[in-house]
Amino acid sequence: MAKVVVIGGGYGGITVAKGLDSVADVVLIEQRDQFVHHAAALRAAVDDVWGNAIFMPYSYLMQRGQVVHGTVSRVEGTTVHVFGQEPIEADYVVLATGSNYAFPAKHTDGSNKVAKARIEQLHESLQHADSALLLGAGTVGLELAGELAHAYPHMHIEIVEKEGEILPNPGYTAEFRHEIEEQIAKLDVKVHLNTRLAVRPPTAVGELGHFEVTTTSGDSIEADIWFQCYGSTTATGYLAGTEYQDLLTRDGTIQVEPTLQVVGHPHVYAVGDITNIDDSKRADVARQQARVAIANIANQIDGGTPDVMYESSKEWVVVPLGPNGGASQLLDSHGRTRIVGAEQTAEIKGADLMVSVIRSQLNLP
Image (tube, rainbow, N blue to C red; front, side, top):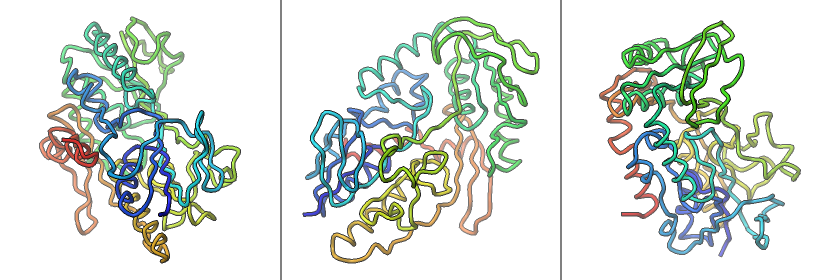
């Protein structure tokens, strides 16, 4: 039976591993000891219940395959090297290591106990914080502002954005920005545009400690806690210095064919945030790409050709601002953009922020 090694146990990785479990000998390598539902991480940052709900075991993901908890040091052809373990020889390799982001939007701790302890410490700090400073008015910064405003209605929240508008990345309509701006204003969140901090705060991200900083525009901001809400980095460091290095782009993504095969490597695939496909980095995109990789690897195992092509998905942007707020920029079946407000955004994201969907995928009750 063909052996498939999947590197990375995020949204794309678990989809591939589960999808090939019945037709291949699957090994999923993940450095964390539990799956982390990062789509709900910002809710977990302010809510004690959610602080536990985003962590889920891999124990029941596959019936036949195995999960190896470890860190990949490098990949040579289809041989995967894991720190402290014997190299794993594979027939197919799927790269699904995703991206990293500042706490609390993402957790990089290998131990869920450590990650949970860090969240608990953040909850304690927030209980004693009267004000918060967020750097970046993209989707993460705005969503975190909404969560903080809902959980701590008396907290004073300010956002500093270096560009001249919120949601500065291309692709957002003026109507969408306006809807978010109106809701942010109602939450009494102050936004500083076209400026940045002259000097970063003296405390660590998420650490309680009153400070005063000045923007390059001359505004003075006082806060008790701060968060970095920008700076996603692609997790492909283990490919540096290998035969795959020349396929890495400037931003760290790896070049893939429409079949999601890594260019020049017919038995190696990549899915999710690490691909150079011009899609937004979302969980549903990773899962869609994973399904293409599953189909093509299954075809190859059966002696066929990998003929399923990935087509970029429709760009849906869903930005909740706490449990009851937010807006979404959607595309209908004709490709026309429409904007919906708080009520429909809550319905799209779901009352449980899709925890039930992920638990079902992991075969958990």
